[in-house]
Picture 1 (cartoon, rainbow, N blue to C red):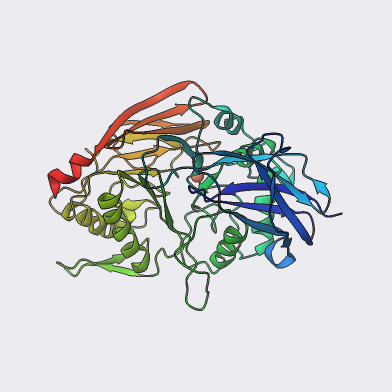
Picture 2 (picture 1 turned 180 degrees about the vertical axis):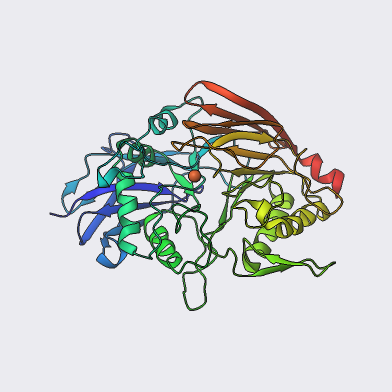
Length: 435
Ligand SMILES: [Fe+2]
């Protein structure tokens, strides 16, 4: 009998959301029933049936449209006449409008060494996932996963192994409950891409991209998957309230193209690839012009000493400088970066982040990890921290009065302990002063 094994939501806007459902077997008749009623008894809308096909990993995809903004929806999965025992929920947002909201963020979910069962190997069922799900002061609009969703290090391009990795993450009860009850935004880092310190040279990256696309309820991606044209990176952007989120892909194009310094003609490896870098610069500029602030989600540390071959922006110093030059030249000053990879909490207000020619181009940087990995340290120096550890995460509160966005950052250990706190203010006047 076909049945839903797990489901999750993402790509929330002011009037839509995406839900992906994993079935145990191929079937033609999967529907979502959703309502404002937590019991799904009144005003229930039922989607058209979708099929779960073997070639897409038995995942059924739903786009819910015509929703009310800033409204909580509850949903259940119906397979034939069978109703899923668990219900999911998500809340829509406002877009390009005054809207205050809070998100949780972290990355790096390695499993415990004691887990010898194959299903639990290198995936996590840490209590931190319950802490994030149940924190309600205020409740979260979405959870931002900064990469290393699992540590399976799949390096042979085996699509079934990528699918199994997602399945095994959802077999961890605490993670499953979090994702069923909170929309998620996510970019991979190395361990959930093609392995430790991986780059774009691994042909297995197309399998990673295919399974991300079929399984994860993502916003529209800029690149299509095409291994003839060498595309399939997962960078994308979206807007919540007056905040632009830009998520870059640090892996898919890494070490395949060169960047050239226009002044010195110096050449070095690129992390982002030309197309993604040009897209990023355009996004940074648009965010500064059109939104109240911009969050750049970049999986790996930005602040790090220049060192060739390093798995941080220190290993891609020339590309980092070109980006910093652009930020300085365009007077982009409502930007904050959020990163994972290093298993620590740290914050810089911009004082240690001056990579443009002549020492400008600064912006605040937040390091928010790890969920459940061994404590580690990378990059720096930082204004506050680092605090290596796990059960660690960030709480970002965006408070918008229509003219000014106050971003309160709390970097926390478990539920209560705040190791770093800082508030940044971004006002419309900031743009005018510089223009
Ligand atoms: Fe990690």
